[in-house]
Amino acid sequence: MKKKTKVVDIVLILIMIVMAASFLYPIIMILFNSFKKEIAISTNTVFELPTKETFAGIENYINALDSKGFFDSFIYSLFITVSSVLAICISCSMCAWFITRVKSKITSILYYLFVFSMVVPFQMVMYTLSKTADQLELNTPWNIWIIYLGFGAGLAVFMFTGFMKSIPLEIEEAAMIDGCNPIQTFFRIVMPMLKPTLVSVAILEAMWVWNDYLLPTLVLDIKEYKTIPMLIQYFKGSFGRVEMGPMMACIMLTIIPIVIVYLAGQKHIIKGVAAGAVKG
Amino acid sequence: MEKVVRRYWPLFVVPTLAAFIIGFIVPFGQGLYLSFCKFTTISNAEWVGWDNYIRVFTDDPNPLVDSLWFTVAFAVVSIILINLIGFLFALVLTRGLRGTNIFRTIFFMPNLIGGVVLGYIWQILINCVLSLVEQPLLALNSTAGYWGLIILMCWQQVGYMMIIYIAGLQGIPDSISEAAKIDGASSWQTLIKIKLPMIMPSITICVFLTLTNSFKLFDQNMALTNGEPMNSTTMLALNIYKTFYDRVGPSWKGLGQAKAVIFCILVVLVSFGQLRATRSKEVQQ
Picture 1 (spheres, rainbow over the protein chains, first blue to last red):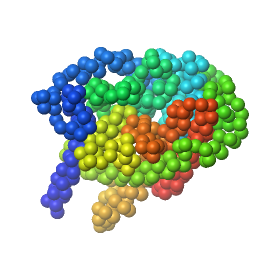
Picture 2 (cartoon, each protein chain N blue to C red):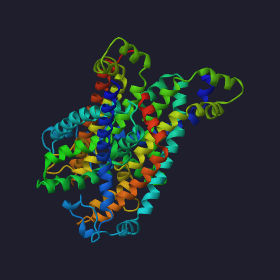
Picture 3 (cartoon, helix red, strand yellow):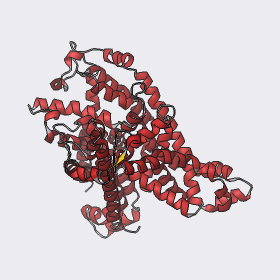
Picture 4 (tube, rainbow over the protein chains, first blue to last red):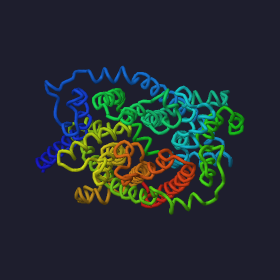
């Protein structure tokens, strides 16, 4: 009996190894090709490894870095992601606390509006949102987080309220009786208890904002500011002939930081996603 | 306590609410209004009643209905595949095999890469395979476009769903599986009669997520096929985007907005319908 289980396990591990390899392959393929010379890259030689003749060293990376404003895009993307996630975490958790603790018609209407906004597809508001953003001059990387706060509020408020319903009111009441005002109560008592949900929300929103393509394309002034996804699209779209080498180098450069962040914090990320989904 | 907190509403509610009004309420309201208008910018909108909605079904070079069928065909297959593979992976990875953590890490990774980047990676890969087997490339091959999208979405989302299923499977109390074993249930019976009913909440969430993701899919669609050939792989979101931004003239934006409203209603109905349908199958733990 025991021996049989072992055999099954070995077969399963082998299958998993094959699956894992096929999951990694597309990225490894891009990595190989990003080291090839421009002439050596064509549609049907993608599977070939770089050889002595076709090996280009880091030439493609240098091209990608200095010609197309990669650094600028990286800074924009980073700033937009960090500012949006911070704004969403702080502002939405405060709003969610108010909604759960103050029971009235208005707060429950608000709650349902937030939930509704989660389901609405972006195309419904894309045109009018970009016009509103233009009017209010929220069209630079430095203040686009206001738009992200508005459009991302639904999911965040939903997840925060889901968690807050489960924390006992007595702790907060005790704090208030001891002389805390609501601001102190929230930041000293509620925020610390909220930490796991904060991590979940931060991860989900960061994944969304960092990779978002359509919203920044429509809202930002495309000639002046490009986020990383916009840069990739620009590489692909705006030339008669696509420069494959630099483009693949650029793809690698966008993937590498993500992979580093992921490997560094993968426990939190995976836990955060699982916990976030259970509450959703 | 409630009374005290209530006085602090300007601090707690206003920042989020203000952004929510700017980022959602106003654009949503304007969007609804504009779907009844002819316009090139918001200021020159001219009321035309139901015209745009009628034109969605009559006069349109890239009919919404075609995109709807393509989206449905895509959604059905991808929902089944993603959930099935994700669940199988979760079953294997909860057996305590060696290397479980590494596998989990690898399977989840594609989720963190953005849709546009994923689309191009797979475009390069699929075009290479197609050229090696001497088939037309993606730009001329709608069958390859369809399956390419499905493979791409499986690759991206299987890991995410797997994580949720793993959490669900680990949440089943040991006492229940033990009891089943003592009663002589085979592992197949345990799977069907114990595990599946116990993880219904996870299934609800995963089907909900894959369903809404498939219906709202845009980035991957744009990057992989951009609707080619002849708009035959255009999904709903891309169809609306193209109606808005790829056509010149005063009559198209209103049409696009009307399509967007229909799309929105469709997504809302489908998502809430699905939630109700699977919620009713959940068991009390």
